[in-house]
Length: 317
Length: 248
Image (cartoon, rainbow over all chains, first blue to last red):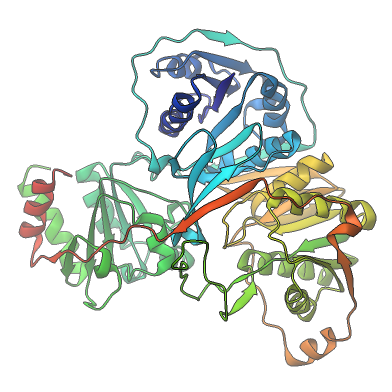
């Protein structure tokens, strides 16, 4: 049959996590010898569907445009996806808070054990997934006939663009009335999203206050980087909790991760240790973060970060 | 309002995870086990609802070996009224857990089930959502605030971009996130009192749920380690190195 990928989007833009999930789907499809389709479920999703159609290797895009799907709440997503699964062997979604929310409902309705947050595809039924906050990697084989899988986007390269798949509008779902959107307070930022950024610079408890994050933000803006934080900095109230990188926050794997005033608790390392290059700036030379950093700079961050900013300015950033 | 709180016994979050040399799993012999930290937050939530007068009865459920009773006992010491222990030595996957919980929900008829968003051992993040789907109930996952509002709950959810607030009609399932509350420590008098609270002993057969796993663990491996790199002396050296790496 075929594999269905659920697109991650905000009704305006298709998120990069979708491209990465398609890569995982194509790996399964290659082993099975089948096709990959994308479902875009939302409200006013014409542009998002058009963007999804450009992903290379995709057979077709299914668009479901309905008021009940505007926020992609779990009950509404279930109404769209479960009926479609008669025609699919597997369904994949990124393990974002949106995907994590609705996918287990799909699995339960199909009587399937979901395979959460895969970081590797061994074959059409065997997958690698981190357990114990990434302290161990389990290889699991599923005996379910249909597979319900969430994908850790940082573990897969984005699928290329250049395709031109047809977009097919599908029937409106039955709208459930059990959970209702009230409001949303999203952090506004011109910087890239943490999980999609090529460079991330994070501050820890060593920052001392929320105001002091300004020195990190200057460097972030020079490099086009996202700003993150350790749990300690979030718990201390320096920055909102959607900044948090770690086991209980976001998992990132950028090209460059700069940890400033972060000691390197296991909790934090679980969220960033797959970054390509790690830089640590910390005045405590025994801080565990130096054990995993490619480049360590033992210095007081309040001197080091402005010095870095000046050096980058000199270099033309 | 009657509140059901499922709790899981897991490797204590402070214990270093060791993969067995034969790659068959994580070594759990003779290590400290505790209640899953997210479940502690659920227990705290239920107890606070009872203290505030919104919950009338609170019940903890654990599915697992004999020692899972200790985890239930911990929740009773924190203030939960009574426990249900579904004994099994098998490894029970989230789907089967959700099915057992469904049977218990049908028997106990709670208005609300509060679960941790995930267990810190298998990191599945599934059980709450699966239970909600099997019951046909609404769900509010990753809760960081919960307010009762007539026969519905207004729940603030931690989503990737910030906080999303939704309203769910009861009965419902809530899964708790880290910042919902700070769980209390049980006081000595309450630990003593908990010893006299009832725990109903059941087995998975009582609920007629097939526990056969759908996933087979092929192997469990140690992730590739990183090694410490080099120290730089100043910003100029750092910028030069990063340029060499091609990352800036």
